[in-house]
Length: 112
Length: 112
Image (cartoon, rainbow over all chains, first blue to last red; front, top):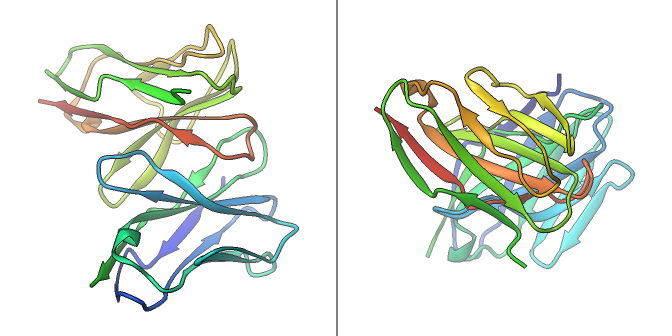
């Protein structure tokens, strides 16, 4: 089955700096790659997603890149702010009916 | 629009007790899933459903049962609670398998 690896597990950046979180996946048939943000005490919430026919997608300070050949995708957050502090999960949709498979998460801390 | 509603938010069980975690969505989504979140383990899939009357096992199904008698509801049953089932449980729903998954607020379960 699909296996999603996420790195790093923790990340601290200064306010205003950029943050990058990387994920790899194993199922070459996976075609949908969302990123979720989880704030303390809440459920994960979608922040951006990308499909396999697209190499890059941006939404204001957030961008995601996908390299299908290498089977890896990354989340880029620019001009980080304290409210970006949260746990971020990458995910991939494997072949068949199975729902999303998630990485183990990255705890991002933005230091003011 | 309530989205995905989970009840209860918190629960303490004694070893061997049974209980049902409730999940309801009002978005007419076909796909529903249950995940458990443990420190350092990310979100692991317990059971999922691709529509009313259809359920299947995920990565960690042992000790849990589900049913899907209606599109709206997807309860998760713990048959005989064990300390290893202490976790935060999230229900999620999506219109299709490769579209945005909406998560509930979670149920924090402690088994003593």
